[in-house]
Every structure is written in structure tokens, then in C-alpha cells.
Length: 266
Image 1 (cartoon, rainbow, N blue to C red):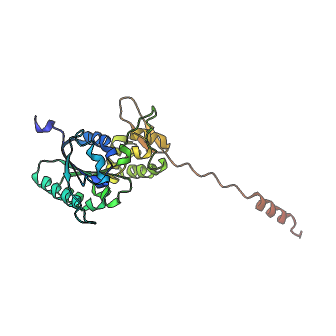
Image 2: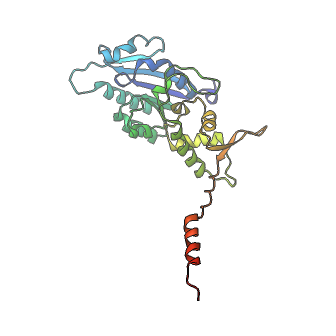
Image 3: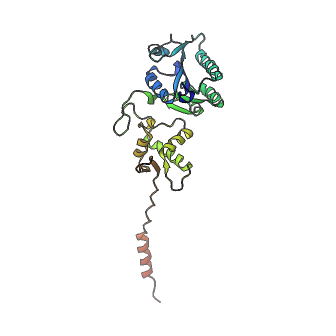
């Protein structure tokens, strides 16, 4: 197959101690949107109850387990092995991207080092993941958003409750539109989506309860929308309403008039 027709090759490395087996189906569906998961490895002590849940689904997703016994309390051999394997895979030059599945900030430097090599890093972890690791990735996906759920006709997710309130999305979108150069304020929604990924690696419409950015934008009621026939969707910030004129203080006016009428006649 010609190289230009092949999906990006990805190395998927999972920290079993910091990722739930419940996300497995959603995880690999999400990764399939990015490219081909050529390497699928998971690291942990599978004799431990925390990691044992993964043992039942390894074959379903063709994940290769890397068993690491906890010989000493407080020392994480799994993390060290994952980092060693990641560097070996990086220097092989065979991969277009890495998927690091963990909520552990210890992988921040690993993600940064891989990106220094010009390779994309996609992080997957819980919302509690420290910002340092989230921002070290090109894109970060909250694993809570990967749990099974359905979509309503309005585009809202009927699965888990939104991780953040809807109004938290508006300032971020407005900031992106402000940074984009436009004479009349109108910008293409697709370009907004790309700039959002650059500004906030963890921005995801699903975090606010929506599958698509367009549905999220509509629901905020903070943007004007142009869907002219034959043109991709455009948006711009709604103009701020002018403040109402200040009402004259009638009491002060009446008092002033009364004072004037009582002035002594010459």
C-alpha cells in the first residue's frame, strides 16, 4: 500500500494502574479516528486487583500485556518500563504518533520529549489529570467522555453527565475568534475547531454534553450563525447590547424646582 494512503501509525501505551478497563471500547474507537494502532501495549501488575480488570479484555483489543511485579512498595516499575519502551519505539522512526493512556503527571516529560522529536502525542486520562500532562500533549481526551452513551436528535449526549457547565465553553470559543483575523468578524467553524485544539489541548464538545462543536455553539446562544447554501458554517460573536440610558433623577429635579420657586423676590 502506498505510504500516502496509509493511516498514521500509532503506538498505544496504557498505564493499567491509572486507567480503567471500562474505557477500552471507547478508547480504541477514539484512537481509530486518529490513525492505526499498530502497537498496543499495557503495563501493570495484573496480579493486583486494580489492574486485573484489563485481563479480561486484552484479547478483544489485541493488547499485549507487559507484566511488572511490584517488588518494592512505593516504586512503580510499570512506569519505568513504559518510558523505556516509548523511547525505543520513538527512535525506531516507525511511528507518526503516540497515545499515552494515563492520568499520571509523571509522563509529562515523556510527552514533551516525544513532541520535541516532531511526533504527535495524544493523551487519554481522567479529568483529574494535572494540567502539566494535558498541555504536554497535542490533544488530550478525558476518559469520562469515552464511556458508552447515546446521542439525542439535538446532538446532546444522554450518557454520563457533562463534566463542565455549558457557559464554561463560551469564553474559550470567544478567545479563539478574537485571535483569528477577520474584517467582519465571521470565521469558519472548522477553522475555529482547529484553533481550539491549539489553544486548549483538552477542549472537547463532549465535555460540555455535546457530540459536535456546531451543536455546542448553537446551544450557548452567544454567537451569530451563518449557514448560507453552498457555504460551510460560519460564526461570529453576538454584539454586546448597548446599556439602557440612565434615567434622570426625578426627585432631584423636583427638589431643584421647588428650591427655585421659594427663592426671595427682589
